[in-house]
Image: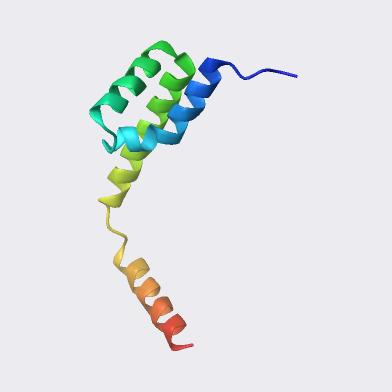
Length: 84
């Protein structure tokens, strides 16, 4: 049976707030706390880097437009569903 350490508790708390941190939705004081933890924890450093890469990829994909035929099929399907 393993015991939870203070470090484990801090990591779990950080993970719950990581996306808010990366989106700039936390107070400056909380951001500093998270930054200090990330600098000292290789696991959380890696997690933050991966999440940042994923968020950047999602933002980049959002800027791309679907092909016209895909948009038209989606509109037709939505219209059909609304008529059911």
